[in-house]
Length: 176
Image (cartoon, rainbow, N blue to C red; front, side, top):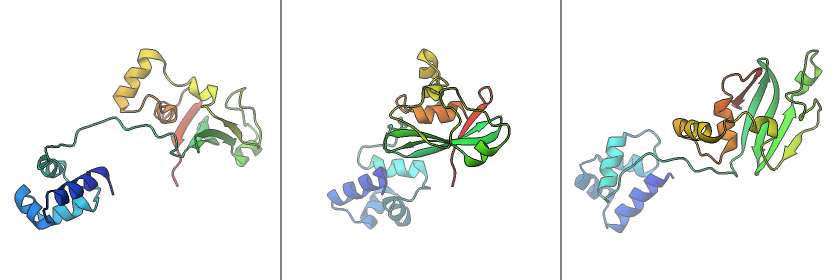
């Protein structure tokens, strides 16, 4: 259940209201209240704020908090050819060249620090080659603000920065 759904449900119950009573007092439909409390993902924000307003609250934009335990995998392309995966798993980074890429005639390493090999590379921090692709200083601050990213989540920043080619490298989120 999402945070807003949980908040509405708990606040309504603490006020001693049934869903029907809350719907009548708030001017919202009973079906909407039920769906909201069940965590329906597609709801109208004006109605959500109407419900939250009953408890002196409103939904406002905020920066998503970085969760270093969130597992993320990305595809690394060299000259638009799938070459490797880059992952953050259990707070560690992993880089592994694709077997087919390693067997191709024209395969080149992504960096001298990540030479061609079938074994996976692992690190507690983002590999320096990838970290250097991320803007620095005020450019980083502006980029993070513009894209609504958490400044501490280097992996997510990298995914956004490298969604377009940088020299011959591009990186995109892995999709099942």
